[in-house]
Image 1 (spheres, one colour):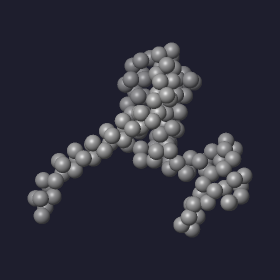
Image 2 (cartoon, one colour; image 1 turned 45 degrees about the horizontal axis):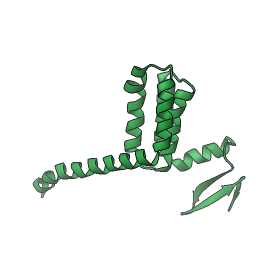
Image 3 (cartoon, helix red, strand yellow; image 1 turned 90 degrees about the vertical axis):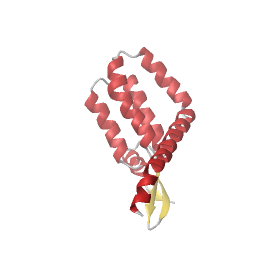
Length: 139
């Protein structure tokens, strides 16, 4: 049985890689306009090409491939876009942003934005069910 399991590993790896590639392709297609804007900002940026292509883009690409929550893709792309808008040349600050996004669930990010008064509502999970909170009141 162990030998049979080991023989399946290469096939499972290929299936897993195919799923990840298809997920990336779908995400790129779904966010085509945002990616065009980022590309335009990149071409006008004073940030070095080496810094972007060797340090920042690999992190973003990895997150686009590996992220399981679809809702966070927009946040990842917004973070990448803001690298160019704010001309963020401090690598540790940029990497910290993506590390933070990677470790938080979308619902946690929404709660933080709510607590910072950046949004008016968020969804919470209480006693096995989702509830929407609007201006501090559960609905």
